[in-house]
Image 1 (cartoon, rainbow, N blue to C red):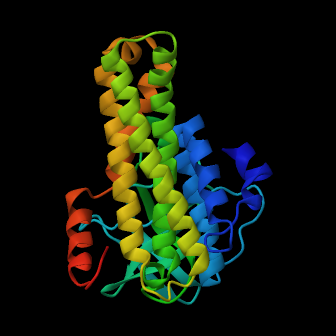
Image 2 (cartoon, one colour; image 1 turned 45 degrees about the horizontal axis):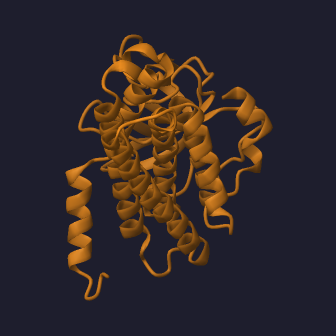
Length: 309
């Protein structure tokens, strides 16, 4: 991750700048190499894009950024303003790269609304809480909780700006690009098996996986072109587009994991450590989707359209 941040991250195109497809192809390639690497890279790239869009402090070379924006009912992270500026106090859960990241964009409560802050995680008032991440899949993502004890923070954008900006939904598709790349790596095991000789049932599974991943690839490519043609989301399609693409890619990745397992049995999961880890990682990472809740929200938006297709 440090090597990618130092050598390649600065060259990644921003979403909506005319090369969004290149951005997602890069994230997919990193996810294909390693799901956790792709997850870290996507978060860092998203942070850079958010800082650019909202006018935050430009990231310095060699610093690794996370985006910690999960807001469950509890615990709650609160922000307060005093003589020394803004400070964050409380616990933030689901902090990917809790021990790896040097900086993070963190949402915190200001009254009854959320606000985004840039935080230098090397200060003494930010501490990962041990033993708060127990997942087998994505275990290396170190996505536990972080305690803030009056940590100094810099506001990025106005209250509500993080969710209300056009780039929020553009960035949501970046996650799907990593899902896609990781799913392709899962499918590679099935592809290799069929090339070495397989029965018709195994070949049929490979054909089905190819169809699913082909649909996912096309959805990502089409969405990238649409974003580049309307980067500020003047047509108000960003939310619907993102939810459709994420659903397509999630379904393809889930189908891929299922079919590779059905086609090849337990063998690769028991004898191929890289494959077993990737399946476990991707299974957990896909749950960043809200599943039927996202589909319900998508359905509500689609129902308001006169001619949705």
